[in-house]
Length: 257
Ligand SMILES: NC(=O)c1ccc[n+]([C@@H]2O[C@H](COP(=O)([O-])OP(=O)(O)OC[C@H]3O[C@@H](n4cnc5c(N)ncnc54)[C@H](OP(=O)(O)O)[C@@H]3O)[C@@H](O)[C@H]2O)c1
Image 1 (cartoon, helix red, strand yellow):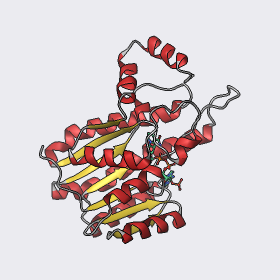
Image 2 (tube, rainbow, N blue to C red):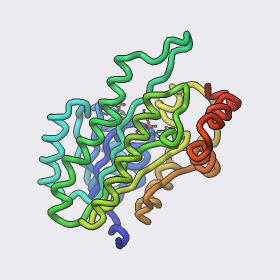
Image 3 (cartoon, protein in one colour):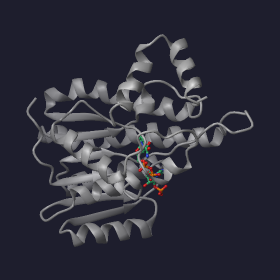
Image 4 (spheres, rainbow, N blue to C red):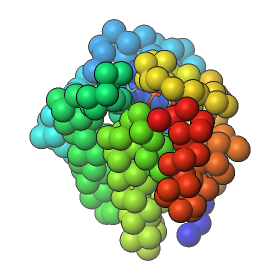
């Protein structure tokens, strides 16, 4: 497949977060259109103003992506109004096991799967018809290095990101013949409210700006998997290749249990 043309119209979900807002700023510029979704109206307005100051035209949408019908209706509408070149499926949440050993909160697990998996798949499903009819477009799914091997601290989060990784890999094969690029983004630790809230060691922590540039570069090259930073991407990949009992012991040794 040929490389995607430099995207002019970019839709980002979870745009008010650390990685989402850094991506919006990275893509902002004269002649660019940014379609930014978030839940926080004030945060979204501030981000829109920063992108506009850089010369971009900005469309914003305040929406909880777990409201799948509203999400789908909005995406159909905006896909009809704008020629969306790139959709970055970025909105996500995390949850972790409690310190008292009683595991994860079930309500939080349900909210996480609704956001990280169902809403992500609903987003892709809603934007694909317009891309198919044009025979062009690009979809980036923000997974995580946590997709390679489940971490004891964040079981549901790892499961959700593994689901997105497999989904994106599967879609990429089928959609390439229709002229649509699909990329799986697998960040390591990136400075953001989500990362701050997460317990456990955070080696090789990147700024959101550095992560956004790596994602932008990988998308321009249409890389199937955009994973960073080295060597954390190699280490986490290796955990998936080793016998699982070894990987579990390594994680315990590294204080991830
Ligand atoms: N930071 C890391 O270390 C890291 C590593 C690997 C992967 N990731 C992935 O990168 C993506 C961005 O995360 P981040 O680090 O930038 O975290 P973040 O700063 O917490 O941003 C998450 C974004 O998702 C939005 N969001 C969450 N639930 C939503 C909902 N129900 N409806 C609409 N929007 C919702 C948040 O909006 P609100 O502000 O309204 O909640 C926020 O804009 C996530 O998919 C995350 O899993 C992050």
